[in-house]
Amino acid sequence: MTRKVIVTVAPTGGFLTRSQHPYIPTQPEEIAADVARCVRAGASVVAVHARRPDDEATCDRHIYRQINDMIRRQCDVVINNSTGGGVNGDMLVPGTNAISFDARREGLFGGADICTLDAFTAYASTPLGEFLMDTPWSKTRQLLGEMRTLGIKPEWEVFNHSHLISDMWKLTAGGFDEPPYVANIVLGMEGVFQNALPYRPEILASLVSSLPPETIFTATLGGEGQLEGMAHAVALGGHVRVGIEDVPYDRDGAPMSNFEQVQRAVTLVRAMGLEVATAGEARAILGLPEQTSANPAPIAGDGL
Figure 1 (cartoon, rainbow, N blue to C red):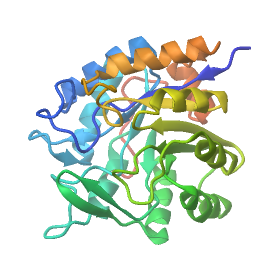
Figure 2 (figure 1 turned 180 degrees about the vertical axis):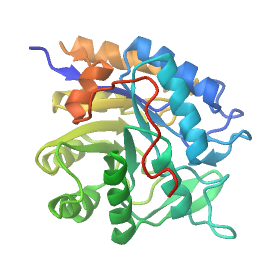
Figure 3 (figure 1 turned 135 degrees about the vertical axis):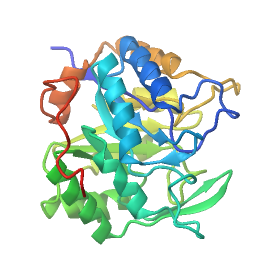
Figure 4 (figure 1 turned 120 degrees about the vertical axis):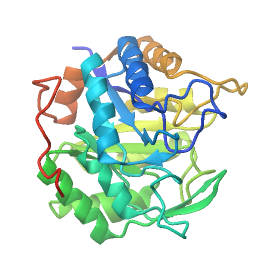
């Protein structure tokens, strides 16, 4: 039986603006339409960042729910909402360069299937300055506990070995998550995130070999090594993520659309003799329940 590979699209992110990229979707209608096109091209998971009407970053539950509902009305796809947000808009503690944990936590209540779990503490260097994402173990446990209550699958964001050994291994062993665990190995972002690693074959192989048992992993590759890194991740048994959030431009500096990037990933997967997963197959791989309705019931805990 041919192995199925999940292609995730990350269409928006928390940093880029319309003036920097002509194809970036930022508003709910734009994001939903773009995701639907990407699903038709072969994506089965979408990693959603929300933006306010002024295009600045937010994790507001109402905006997330609006985006998620619009996506579900147009296509069948697994929805992953960010609890990282961005570095402007609603996301900063007033008067500081620290990203607000309370603002990040809002991302849990938009009705997603998965939410990112940024369990680390690090600075992000952006065109707007340096910003601190501060996530001690107590806050990570809080996020994990709320995800479990809400029926959300955590996606562990892994930028280096410490995020595996000190965070993911420790907390999964403590019963704060259930297998199959889901990890997103992020490489090539060393110019943005402190303590992030570049893509090199030996680094990716080492991280994959260090994952807890029963972990499903996706590779997010920034920089010029994206295609090589995606092929390597698939060869190691993993899945791939593409999109404007991670790689907005090609090697010549020309902007790429999300649809184009999904098409390229699908072509790569099929060239390796494999097939891309449908949304239903992605749910089975990730240990998610089957989708029973395009309009899910109100979310438990929405009043929190």
